[in-house]
Length: 443
Length: 185
Image (tube, rainbow over all chains, first blue to last red):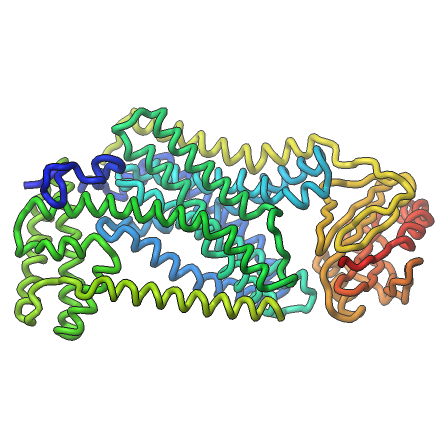
């Protein structure tokens, strides 16, 4: 038995997911090879091939001229992308996105959006110089041209993913994930180009100093609230058009337009000369300005992500709640399953009580519970008893293992303190990084 | 494994729309830009702000190419055009010696498959010390000068054919002599 809009708590009130952010699970028949028949797939493949060729041409000269610095830039920003990628792709624990689509999103941002945006952005800056003055173009060109061209091209990447695999866009959160990865790809390639340009501008030959400085400033000081964030917002708008079929098309397009404008405005504010401080002027002031410009959109978008995650979690957990089977999931486990830090807390608690075996069993139980919830939701449209049975058996197997280890329930303990400790650690690391940044930039 | 014909058509139409937007941005915008004139008159005998506190009095009869001119607080570029002669001034942050600044320009010229001659010491009318000489690239020839000011280097390149260069030499020499650096407070 499955539910469509039951309350996780079973009080007869529709969950948040049904009220403001519907979830449409990907049906079991949604297979990747079907996308090969769609023109959108071949358009994306062609655009990525052209973008890759143009990107190689762009950095080929730098590799020949500054082999060490260019390699260092490629390596540093490739490594930099890994934690972002892991974080973004893990946002949707309950329904993971297909890796191929994540790669396409990243590739669109890094190969297509960068190469298409560059000539368009230059043209707009030139027109500003012709219409107003070179001084105006120098001051406001990147604030006007950058967001206008780049946000459109990046958002088209999420639209292309919708065209390739519409069934995989199940909730607003999916749009956030694909948008973030498009933005991440863009940010990484753009930062590599900035780094090699800085090497050339420094005029000290094959020196990695400018690469490290660019990595520090654009990667850490500016990276947290850059393209990844802007595109996440625009991606949420695109996903909203797809999933909010309970509203009129005009309303959904309006939401998408507001999200795109939000991304444009955050980008505009970031690039604008308002509150501008040049690197090297005053390290402390630079940090303050970066925080003032970056934190408001960061917080706004994090709240959006948090809300979208919770709504999606509500939906999937309602599937398990409706089973009312303590062997499948206890009420305490259902509470834990929807929140990332609580799942991690439960694994740590299992490790403390039952060692590595306990932690592994809890991890597998959580994964199996999430997969079972997904199959239960799919069963509303397409019934696949084999998949349903497979994950039910896996849950029961892990439950039996936990019982044999003397830790029968995958619960989190001391939740408030654990969460606070984690937050304090993040705060301490952030402060440490900011202090180091101030010191480095003041030198 | 089949996809409904209607869905295929819708998908193709939407893909075409994406392609059209991309083409409009990558090709259309640059085409509009090229269709607008890039050269604008500059007031003669008045110092023009190149960037980072560097000014120059443009040569008589020169026009400013606004697409290649970008003055900012820390750096700047100005491109003046006299007929087919291009007179470019690039100001960039630099904290090394004059030789290093000349090397930086040499690297740019070599990257364009050209070469820079040994050159001679130079001095602007305002007292900036520098180095000047001649350079060649496969499609252009010209003169260069590099001056050093506190925290910035000033690269000057003048390119065109031999005849055109000879015709404009006097006014450009006079303009180079007016390059001034004023440190910002």
